[in-house]
Length: 301
Length: 217
Image (cartoon, rainbow over all chains, first blue to last red; front, side, top):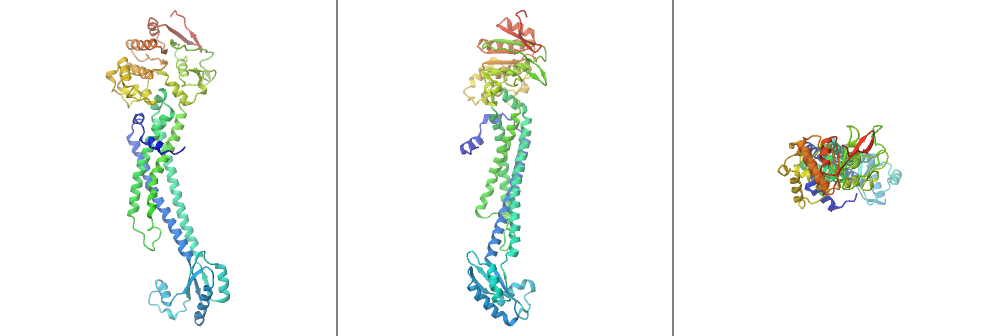
């Protein structure tokens, strides 16, 4: 079916006469609305989860891929010479933007969380670390390893992929789970609306029989039901979405080094995405009711 | 026409003339209702052909059937309404579903309610109506689209003699206005009463056949 805005508006504003042919039902109407609201509420969180883990995966992938570390473990008297050799070698390596040896203080800072600030590091054989920042597409890790092993025997290159990969993978899985949840929420809502619409259609069998007898087309009868359920789902989902967004807004803000839990939320234009949830809910209700109405009406004379 | 394996009506060949007045009679279960249902597309023949206004019912889509029903007024014995709407809206329902402008038809509607004597009951809900009022409301609903044919299935089954007479009067008036009328009934008194006012033919269903009954009723 082609999406024609004027036809959608016409459908939603409807015809007051046609509206009245279906008897009003207070309780089931509110149930449909409530379920649509609850689904929309959950959908906001699933969406927030997907977007947040997506961001996280991108950040981990990006930041960690841009830097790597060379560790030099050598007898104390050779460390300085090997560091120098490694730095010289890195200067001539294509794809390396910059490389610098960490100072003793920086290394102490890195180790402080594990050993405490008072440990006399200068008495321990701490390996020297060199931070390598990549440029453009990065360097050839295997090639660099070969050259290092030839010229700087004590150097070990750690390009972080070993532990970056499972993290990025976990984040991607989480994101997939989020999208899967959104899909399941959509399908559940369709199932729910179908059940409600089918119940309404069979409860109104007499109404439908009378309408057919006086010459109503199937589309006219179906329209009356579709309009009702679409509006209910739309309004319910709108309320659920607003509540869900309010709760997301009230979540504690993400800290700089926060994990994905505190990062759950929307950033900038992502705040517009949940606004599509009510529309999607309305569309799902429209299609589900249409299918149910066509099926029910097809069985009548 | 067969039902659940057993043939109900067979070897029927009949053409309803425009402007005629027919009674359809026969014992209970003989197939009067089935015959009428064939006439407004509520049932499909299992064998043979039914043509409504020249169109084969088997070739009609569901929308074609809906359009055809706007030209056929149907009155049932236990007529059904939309119970949540007032009588006037129920009578106007065929106009509503065919997308007619109700405001412009308003005077027609009032005239029609007057004609069936239900003007004062226009705001009543169908469940509040008596049997006779329901039948007259059904007749008003059946004719509001100015159909070519009115089919009535035991229209007087639930109402007293005086009310039957009144209903018959309305049907006879419709026939004089050129409508084709077909009434299924086993009430012989009603048929006799009609014969004094209008040239009515009587069709009898027996032994699965449709026969034109003699004038000697």
